[in-house]
Amino acid sequence: MLDALARFGRHGMVALERFGRAHLLFLQIVAGITSLLPRPGLLVTQTYSVGVRTLVIVTVSGLFVGMVLGLQGYYVLSQFAAEDSLGVMVAASLVRELGPVVTALLFAGRAGSALTAEIGLMKATEQLSGLEMMAVDPVRRILTPRFFAGLISMPVLAALFSAIGALGGYFVGVGLLGVDDGAFWSQMQAKIDWNEDVINGVIKSLVFGLVCTWIALFQGYDSVPTSEGVSRATTRTVVHSALAVLVLDFVLTAMMFGE
Amino acid sequence: MMKIRQVEIAVGAFMAAGLIALFFLAMQVSNLSAFTTGEGYEVSARFDNIGGLKVRSPVAMAGVRLGRVVGIRYDQSSYEALVTMRIESQYDQIPDDTFAKIYTSGLLGEQYIGLDPGGSEEMLADGGEITMTQSALVLEEIVGQFLFSKAEEKGLE
Image 1 (cartoon, rainbow over the protein chains, first blue to last red):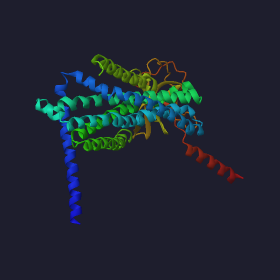
Image 2 (cartoon, each protein chain N blue to C red; image 1 turned 60 degrees about the vertical axis):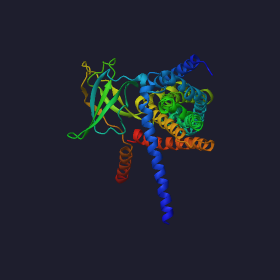
Image 3 (cartoon, chains in turn orange, cyan; image 1 turned 120 degrees about the horizontal axis):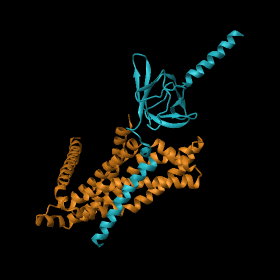
Image 4 (spheres, rainbow over the protein chains, first blue to last red; image 1 turned 135 degrees about the horizontal axis):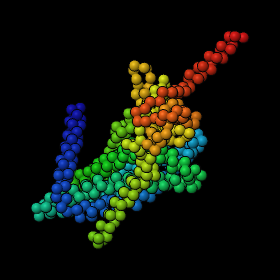
């Protein structure tokens, strides 16, 4: 009985310790911005591998999510003879929820796992120790550029996802199902608010980008330096990022839209 | 390994695509293109009951949107709702005896303020007040009145 309690307590301690390490690492990463500013080239290279290479999966998913929203929305709305509101429904769901959330999940799967594996392998092959031997701080040199690259890329990717999704919904709704062209856009413009909807979506995507990149970098940096350890860290990155995104999405939505 | 220049070009295109997407969301998807705060003048009106009117609801004359509701307050002294509207400055020819009514667009649509022009020579200016108003129709009241008159007819027979 007491043994079980002790085990429970030990797990709790380990989890809390890990949480604390993650926050310390976060502070170190952000403090590293001073050494990043004189060398923007590092940021550009990392934005390429984190952002540009995630572009294809995000745009293709955005297109199809928008098209599915168009089909499903039409099915429901046509029962109330309110097909003209299809644009509102597609754009509101994309800009408020699906854009940031689905992009963050894809981002965690595509870019986050790659970051963890890369840094985990650097640690396993002792490249990080090598850097330290040369008096180069691996956090500043390796982690900081990747962190800010992720932070920049996520809002860009989410905005692209929403924009292309709206076009996908337009294609299905107006092109295939015969919703009125003018009503689709004008209803959308009348109901979607720049501050209330679009800016809040951008804030969401920024928060998700921060959390996903942070989790990915911490898991890689904190991984057990063996091949099994790296593989477990990569799995944890995807699982933790997905959970964090969904929970944070609820919290942010409640704060932004719940009056 | 790609040349650093190609990487830079790809990243530049990526950021530009993001900005274009935001611009698209601003102009085509959201109402930023129809944003006219700061321009125009404010007038107020008192209603006994505003129904489902909200801040940002349209203010229309002859079906054309002239402005938006910018504020709704409850006046404790007169037990009325004080609605402030901002009319775009290009529409400055609204007579001061204009009638303001709260309408519903469609059966289930949102509520808006419809203005019926009066015949006065004086025009509404910033800070002006529309004195003639008609409250929103509340469905329960209409149904109640209908039932009441039915019952009355029965009673007379």
